[in-house]
Amino acid sequence: MERIVRPRLPDYEALRSMIYSIKRTYPFVNCSVCGRTHAGRAIFVLSVGHSKAPVLMTGGFHAQEWLTTLLLLRFFECVCRCIAAKEELCSINIAGALHGRELIVIPCVNPDGVEIALRGPNAAGSYSQLVETVSEGTLKNWNANARGVDINHNFDAGWETLQKMEKEAGITGPSPRQYGGSMPESEPETAALTRLCRLRRPRHALAVHSQGEEIYWRFGECVPEGSEEMATLFAAASGYGLVLNDGLASYGGFKDWFIQEFKRPGFTIEIGKGKNPLPLEDFEKICRDTQLMLTLASIM
Image 1 (cartoon, rainbow, N blue to C red):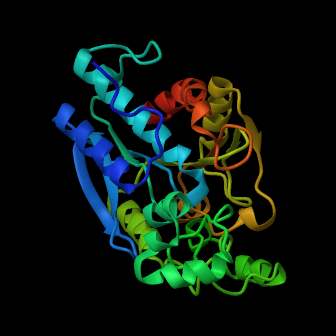
Image 2 (tube, rainbow, N blue to C red):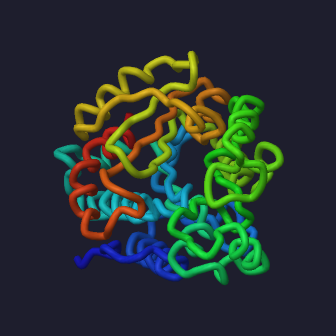
C-alpha cells in the first residue's frame, strides 16, 4: 500500500488531506477537532484504541518546526498500517501492545503559524496586518500564532518568572517568537490543548519540537515518578541526549504545564539537527531515528 504521509510541505490543505486519507484508509481511527484557531483552522486530533489514561503526542507548536507535524502523521500512519496488516512495528506487536490502551496524536497545535510560515501573512486572515508589521517583512523567524503569541510560552507554568524574563529580553508584545501573551491560556490553541488534557488526563505526554536531537523530561525540581527512567529509555532508543531547560525555554511550555498540572511524565523531544525549518530531505532519516522511541512511548 502506498504511503499517505510523504515528504511534502504540511500546509493546512495538505494536512487536512493526509488526515482524511488516513481516516478513510483505516476506519478504526477516530478523528475529531479539539478547537479552532484565530483564523478558523481546525486543530485536528487523531486517536486509535480506547483507554481511560491515553498517551498523548503533540507537534507543530512552532511555525518553523512544521517537520514535527509530518513526523507525527507518518508515525500514526505506521501504527495504523501495522494494526491493519497485523504486522510488527519495531519488532513489537503494536496491535497487541495497544490492546486496552489509546494513542492520541495532535499533529499540529498551531496550524495558523505553520500556514503563515509556509504561505505568508495573508494566511493570518484578519491578523494579516499584524503579522506584516511584527515580522518587519521577513517570516524566517516566525514561530508564533496569527496573533503573534508563542504557543509554547502561553501555558501556566512559571508564568510570572517567564513574563519577567520576556520583558528583560525586550519582548513586551506580539512578536515572531517568545512572546507568551497577555495571560496563560489566552490563545485558542493553548486552551484547546489544556481542555483536552483535563478531560482525558493522559498518563504521559510528548511535545515534539525541532531541533537538537535532545530530550527534556523535568520542570524545575518537579520530576514525576518514572520520568527519568522513561527519558533514559527514549534516549537509548533514539541516540538523543538528555538535557535540562535553561533561559526562556525553562517556563511556559506545554511539557512544563503538563508535569506541573498532573504530576505525570511529560517530555519535549527536539528532533533532528540543523537550522529550522529542517529540510524535507531530513524527513526519512528523522523518521527512522525516532520510530523506536515513539513506538515505546505509545505503549508504555
